[in-house]
Amino acid sequence: MKSFLSRTSSFDFELPVPQLKNLLAAAVAPELSGFTYNGAYLWYSPWKDHCRKVIQAYPLKGASYIFLWGLCFDFLPVFGETGIYRYQRTDKSVGLHLFCWPPGHWDSASGQSVSCRFSRFGQNPGEVESRLLQAFHEAQGLFGPWFLNCCDLHSALTEAKRQRTAPASQYNWPSPDYVTAFLLAANGDAQMGMKVLDEFWTQYGSRFPLALYDKLKEKLLACANGDGIVCP
Image (cartoon, rainbow, N blue to C red):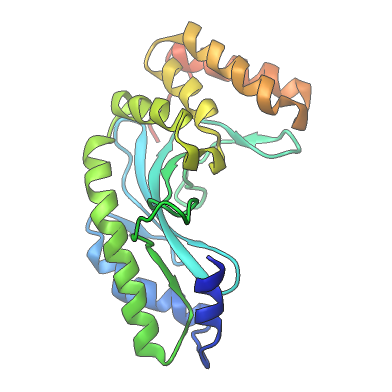
């Protein structure tokens, strides 16, 4: 990544952020039929089976970005170190819960060439747009098949279980362990969901207030009973 950043930052032209958002709206949004652009860096689909598809141009260091893709769930509470949790059920709050990084992003020695990255730096505006579209089409070749195979709660659970042992997914937040716990409950397996939630808390719980753990267990059991799953 360092070589990429140093190369792009040597260019004279830098596309300002407002113009980048305009470019994303003009160049990328029309290629995402059925998705809504939020005016910044994120596109989302309508809700279906308590999921919505999400694509994001995620800011990296400097003026670089990378495309990510995944699902947002209406029953998954998200939280930070303060221990305050919230749901991402509205158009303004939508985010990525179960999501993917492009192959090789976290492993520069993997030899995989797909990057799905672009920069606001370039020789001129046309080059920035060209590289942005190239990165999007690289990502599109990956998220298209991914969404076909991960489009409901059952297939999402299969993917979440896979991500629990995938090295690149260990950088994800929410953690794949946490997402798996709630997906197990949403698929009717509260006992295994609670077990996975316990494992998650053993690993990460020291960073958060203990009272949060009790609240998360309550929310997970509500999911298993159907009380925590809503239809926005």
